[in-house]
Image (tube, rainbow, N blue to C red; front, side):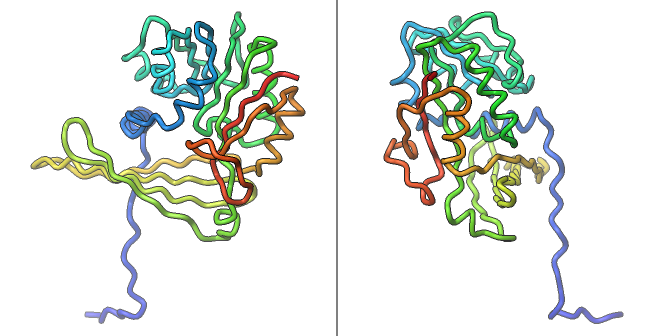
Length: 264
C-alpha cells in the first residue's frame, strides 16, 4: 500500500452542478424578497399618477413596490422563468412583457424609465449599451426621467489581479431548511465574473443536500465611461449618488452609482 504524502496532499475539488434557469429564478426571488433599500430613490422620482417602464424587472419586486403608489407600471424581462414568478403576484396596474431591452417594441411612451439593480451592467459592450439607451429614448417622453443603478469597480476590485473576492450569505427556505450562497467575484478586462454557488440544505430527514452554481458576467466600466455613454446617447445627468443612503459618489471608493438623467 502506498503511503500518503501529506506535504502534497490535496482535497478533491468540490463538485457544483449547473443551476437551472427555473431554480435560479426561485433562489433570486427568495433572496430579494424583502430588499427595499433602493426603493426611496425610485419612489421619490416617479410621476404619480404616471407611467413607468422597468427594464430587467426580474420576478417583479420593484414593480410591485412602485405599483403601490398608484403609478401604471410595465415591466419587461428576457427570462420567461422570472416573468412567470412575477405574474403569480401581479396587480391590476402592472403589465409584464417578455422583451429584450436592446430591442424594445412598445407602442407607447413613458414618464419614467427605470433600469435598476445593475441591469445595464449585464450588457457587456459599449455597442450593446448604446443600443439599449437609444431604445430608451424612443419610449421615454421628452420631459421624462431615466433612473438607473450601476455597479462601478472600486480600487479593491481593480487591484485583485488573479485573485477573487469571496462573500457569503444565508437565507431560509419557506418550507424549511436554508440556502448558503457563496459569491466569488473576479475582475479582468473591464468585466466582472460572478460565480454564485448555492448550497441547498433542506434540513429534513432523508432530504438530499445540493451544491449548485451559476455564473454571471458584468460590464465593469469606470463612472466616467458610463457618464460619457449617457451623454453620447442623448442624455444629460441631473443627479448622481452613491449607495442606498444617496451620498456623494467618490470614484475609486464607491461601487454603487445611482443616476437620474433626462433627454438633452
